[in-house]
Image (cartoon, rainbow, N blue to C red; front, side, top):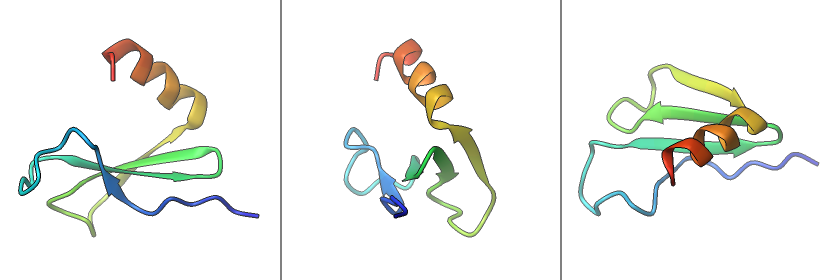
Length: 59
């Protein structure tokens, strides 16, 4: 079974702002894209690398 959250903005993003990133969790991959360019490129990270990044930036 595939786990996929779909694209979402951070809960810390302001309501009407376009200046943020969107994240998508799918299985063991985390994808990140610019919310202003949803059809543009997206970065992909392993789930463990994403968790390490979040622990460093303090969520």
